[in-house]
Length: 192
Image 1 (cartoon, rainbow, N blue to C red):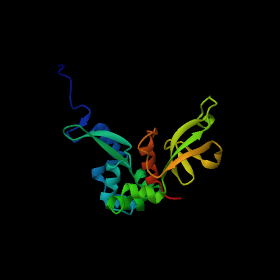
Image 2: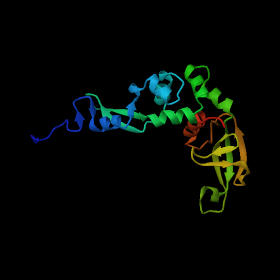
Image 3: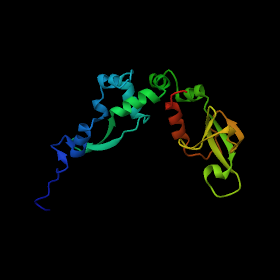
Image 4: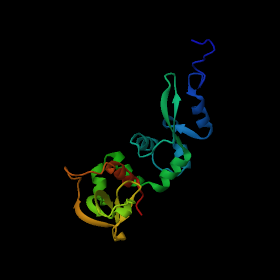
């Protein structure tokens, strides 16, 4: 082994990597650093434990991962902008009821009117260069039909024809693999 090799060259002592220290200096922080003052200053009026639950359940996604500790554990880092965004855009009253155990995730979906749909969509709506309509499985919320969390249709678009509708995910024949990501996004979304 090369005697000039320093196995700890990317670390500051044994506490954190140089990248983790740089993240701290930019105002990013691990979940263990979140405190009530930080949350209140960014308009988050709920408890620290609720914010941590949102992170652990991945309703809030970290902006970066850095090595920390003696064992070089990969640690999620968050930003103050994330706290502000969640405070302004998330349906926190609904998520708080789920956190407290007063509402199940299934009850929350029913409360929001989320249902499952099999529909025909004209291929041009999906930017496909074919002429035959495609049969797809969608998640319906309000007047919107979601194929993915980023791709939605509105019924009056004349791009979609409803074939079947279910209140629960059908036990057979459901092919939309993005369903859980769509549901998580819809549960987070502030009601408009």
